[in-house]
Length: 152
Length: 142
Image 1 (cartoon, each protein chain N blue to C red):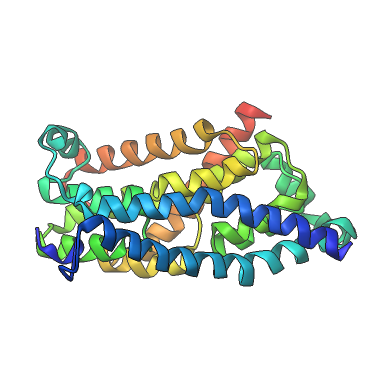
Image 2 (image 1 turned 45 degrees about the horizontal axis):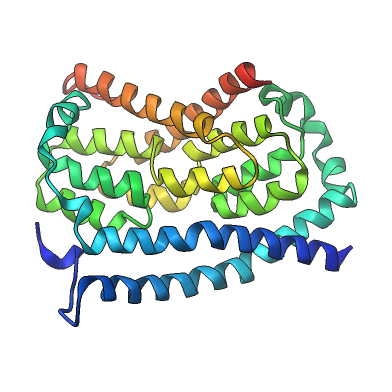
């Protein structure tokens, strides 16, 4: 195996290099939380407590009840599938969901999240990345439905 | 209303940071010491069941633990270097789209109160089942 995945510059012990990289990534991650996730949480919290999200999503109730979820959880699914799981977490947190509902969401979105970003990576492995993205959505929703039957 | 929401949001961010920051350090350490690149021989028979040769182990581990985006560097470059067959690349892709970044993804929903078992176990079972089924079907397409 080539060494490029491990240490690129021999500037000290491996753990120090790894720690340096971790610090850089951690700082970026903290900024990401403060700049993206915090405002998203605040927006979601305001939409939930004002009742606006319930009003907007009310018509989805028959669909979302398939997964034992309140209609507002559709926003969580959208955020997770189109953006990423951190966005989904920020939108889901103010909803006061039961552990069963969180587990169902976690299973659906664990399988089908960041669909656009990750399709770019999957494309490097296989030309059938469209089919695989569809597979993720179908598997995720299917598995979530089964889990809802088991838990709820 | 707004200050309350901001405060609760900060608490969520702190919880996420408490979980993810140690993971970042752990991942970087594991990567630096080549944990994902060790040719664990005992896993070979298990790899064969899901349609992967020995060369598929490193990209598989990178994807399962680091995730598609974070592990993409190892995933893509190693699968090129190892000259993985098309069927192996498909097996890898199918396994990983179903089941990747298992620690981080699961932890995020456990923070919200979800069950780690019910979030993770079905993904693993599906990833193994699908790839084993594909491998049995041989080289016929998805």
